[in-house]
Image 1 (tube, rainbow, N blue to C red):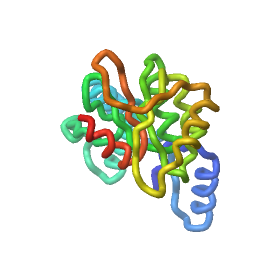
Image 2 (image 1 turned 180 degrees about the vertical axis):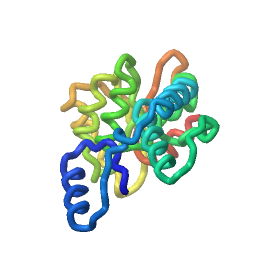
Image 3 (image 1 turned 90 degrees about the vertical axis):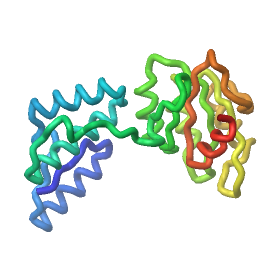
Image 4 (image 1 turned 30 degrees about the vertical axis):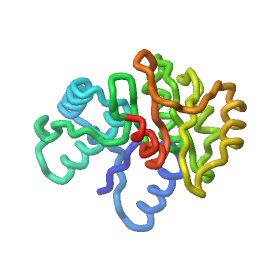
Length: 198
C-alpha cells in the first residue's frame, strides 16, 4: 500500500494510477486513512506552535504513514521541533521562508492572507520570479531588494521590471524597522545576506 498526499497537479494522480495498474501497488489517499484522533492531535499541535496550514496537512500525512506502519498515534510523538527556514518567525516582526518557488509563494500568500508585509527579496535567474511576485502581491506592502552576489542571481534591472510588472513598490533593503513587518523570502543566499543585518 502506498499513501498519496494532497496533490495540486492532476498529472501526479494520473501517474499513481498508471503505476498501480502496472505494478500492483495499491495507492490510497491519506484522507481515507484519517481518524478523528489524528485530526484532534494535529489541530492541537498546530495551534500550540502556530504552524501554517500546509504544515498541518503534512502532519496529517505523517500520522497516516505512522499508523500504516503499525505504530500507535500519540500526541507526545509530535512534540514540535521548529522547521528551520519554513515560515520561521526569527523575530517578533520577521518571518523567513526559503521556499523560493511558486508553490511556496502560494502557500505563504494564504498564511498571510490578512497581513501586509515588506518583502525582503532577491532571486536566481532560473526561478519564475515574475509569477512569484504576482502570487505574493496581495500581501506585500513593498518589495525591499536585498543584495546577493553570484552569477546565478537575476539582474537588478530584470527584478525591478518584474516588481513593476506586478504593480509593487520597491526599494533597496537597508535593515528592519521595529514598527514594520517583514517576510524574508528566497534561497539560502537571501537568508545568508539577511543574516548580516541581524
